[in-house]
Image (cartoon, rainbow, N blue to C red; front, top):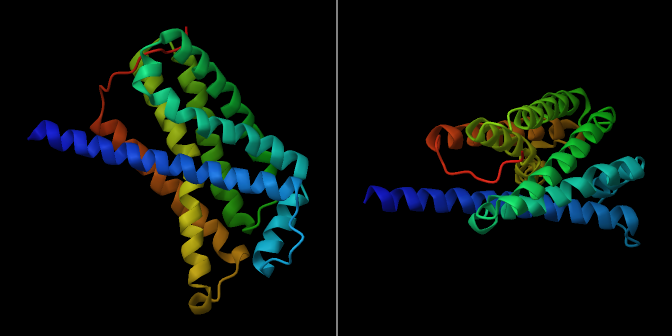
Length: 220
């Protein structure tokens, strides 16, 4: 009975993880398309303003979200048992994640200088981006220890996927705009704090409930 419960819990965690990867990938793909092929049809004013804000830093935004897209696409395969059972493949994929993650984290810093949500959003972005880069760096330095490497990689991943959690949070703010009268500039920062913090806490909870989960294929 206990084993079945654990398997169900793991299944729910995996489903939530895949959902976050899907949301992150969809958001990145949409942003890439809008940047490369701006819509000719007049958009909702709020969305048009957001698109214009990202378009003002088109090259930097693309240099940030393309590696991020590749990162979240690789993640499900990186955790897959079949890939972990092939150390050489898993090791190369881990190197790719380090490179893509580093580019994503570094390019997020200058983008934080032009936040849509003002200082509130900038503070959340800088804090969690710094935590992401720190965790990724720790995972690299501790790659000689399977357990510690796994812990810091999962911690970095939980931070990065926080951007996916902000999407439904923003959706709630947009849906309740007629009641709250809040504009994106007013709620983006709050959405970032909620999304990143919730996903980070979820990642920490996973690490504490799965302290010795098998993990193979760490880089040499």
